[in-house]
Amino acid sequence: MEIALRIAGIGAGHEVITTPMSWVATSNVILEVGATPRFVDIDPVTRNIDLNLIEAAITSNTRAIIPVDIAGLPVDRTKLYALARKHQLRVVEDAAQSFGSMWQGERIGAIGDFVSFSFHPNKNITTIEGGCLVMNNEHEAKLAEQYRLQGVVRSGFDDMEVELVGGKFNLTDVAARVGLGQLPHLEEFTVRRRQLAQLYFELFSKAQATSLGLMLPLADFSQCNWHMYQVVLPEQRLNIKRAGIMAELDAAGIGTGVHYPAIHLFKLYRGMGWKESDLPQAEYVCRNILTLPLYPTMANTDVERVVDTLMKIIRNHLN
Ligand SMILES: Cc1ncc(COP(=O)(O)O)c(C=O)c1O
Image (cartoon, rainbow, N blue to C red; front, side, top):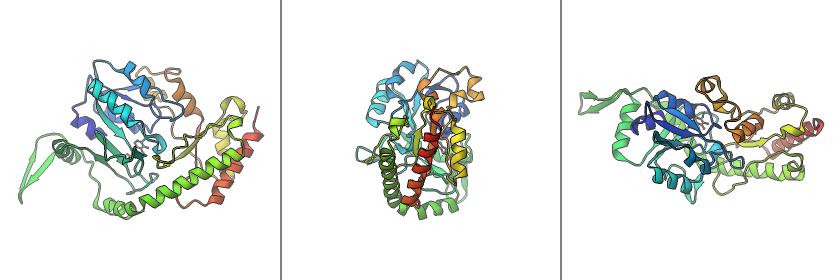
């Protein structure tokens, strides 16, 4: 994502619109190139950036949008690119979580401006560490190769030239080989993730979870790769905090996670003027979201145990 911003010529004095509900890398790359992140609130149903709020955040300094497909659920690409075209903005899709997801019959990465994938171990396929940047412009792809490794361009047997300052972003050959081993399994991983997500919905429905205020994810079974299954806890109805629920689940042998705390409330970003109540939807969701276990080798009985245990904890702690 940092390389994409550099290729797009984004730097000091420029603003980049993004979501506060993401891994902090999403906005750190904006700071890394010297630009300013401009957070826009989320849609609590999709948990992705609220595209309807973007126009109000555009200024004469805005150069790009970095949307995130949180949990693999794709941001509406039709609306996104209509906005980008209208305001002549570049798009760097943070598709770290949506490898294998689709938008209207096409794979994420097959369409769009810049698309950035992560192959970190918690992703749907992994290279242990690493990722890739996809683009659709030959000239920009050449620039990406330069930024990737110290700006170096090699030619012939012994010639080397350097015209720009690059970094060291190259994927190792060993990591690439791990990825090539993973890639043929992508479809089967996604199919199994969808089955597990479907089972979560069925069991939460049987347990009447939503009548207790638990918010489930959007049930998208055609496009989402189900990178995560996340619920939003009913804060007002509980006499226990999220960390307490996580501790009780942990004691029952169930690991959970938080993806993510709201970025704009981190010290670094508060120091830039962001504060509580700036982005109320994201703040509520980020304070109460809980990522439940979901991985292809998970058994159906594991999902049953997670739902049973979580619902028992919630029922034991209702106000
Ligand atoms: C939404 C999002 N953006 C960016 C990243 C960063 O990816 P990586 O850890 O491969 O640098 C991640 C994953 O860690 C992520 O989930």
